[in-house]
Image 1 (cartoon, rainbow, N blue to C red):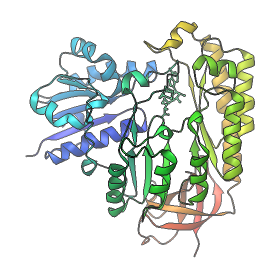
Image 2 (image 1 turned 120 degrees about the vertical axis):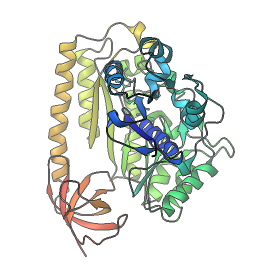
Image 3 (image 1 turned 135 degrees about the horizontal axis):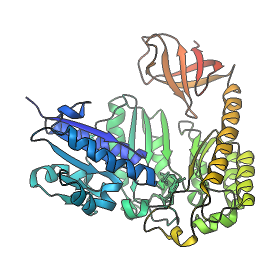
Length: 431
Ligand code: SAH
Ligand code: F3S
């Protein structure tokens, strides 16, 4: 009988993709994936350390896995908590068999065979085997183009857990995308912590050139990328988006705060005015772009005035989506020296105000689509109703619509939007 594995993933797109890579290499070894941790021969936890809460979850989950572990099975901890607390995990949880950091995803085979218990280095050769990725979507492929981050935002632990920036050669990226498209994955999502800092190590091609190359590949119907750093947006990048209609009109451009004073303390490398100027340049070239953002509330020293500036910036940019987090102090980050987080009750009040404001805005945004005909990439029947088709618009809204159920997945269809729902749109395919 074949061996089985169980994998649980928290955190960002990078972690999702790392889990797809781990899962793919296990399947090549003949393992079968199971959803019940009690029956698995190998239990993997792919962890996130971006905020303290996610990290605490790991230690409580470790206890549960110990109870679930059957005779002879193995437990492996991966991801950013593994990277940071590897030795502590082995000391506190001796039932864990190995701990591996994000730099070692390509080395699972060796770790399983060789009994290496602690794999926390960042090997020169990251061994990115794109043929062995277990992709959950039949129409979409995520493709890493750059790992790590060279920015030093004072609140952020990512540079410690994911290492320095390493870009993949453009030839490997193109080969991977060609093979994904040949399998029907016509939507490509390029991934990086600072995706637009990409530089091909061989040709020195920058992100704008990469976008142009990938958008021109045959069969790429939609091209997305995440996450862009505002200070790395160039005119060439904007021109590439403008000139290729298959590049998504959805741009995640985290601002973190609307106050230049806070931005400086965060070392975000731009002021409020510079951020707004980037948004204006993009809107001038590509007016239909839908922006989304991340906000940190309660950064040390954030005053009412600073927060009001965040509110007014959000009003000004009119984001389609917004993700807000309470500041969480992370070990080893330089923001620790800037003082304690602000009073939790105040932070809660501020974050709730953001959410309320955004909910209202989102309802308006979605309602504005009613009556319009939009191209939708058909991804398959809706999860809730198999008689209904489901896909996403160019700017990333989910649309559930009526139409011909024999439509091949991956087809781009014109859909008339009839009604805005809570988080999604409803419509009908038109001839
Ligand atoms: N460039 C990365 C950022 C990763 S972290 C990317 O791919 O998005 C994602 C978001 O988490 C950040 O944009 C920030 O808003 C939030 N975040 C990071 N560190 C945090 C901290 N210490 N406390 C609260 N939120 C944090
Ligand atoms: Fe973190 Fe700033 Fe890099 S948010 S991932 S250090 S761009």
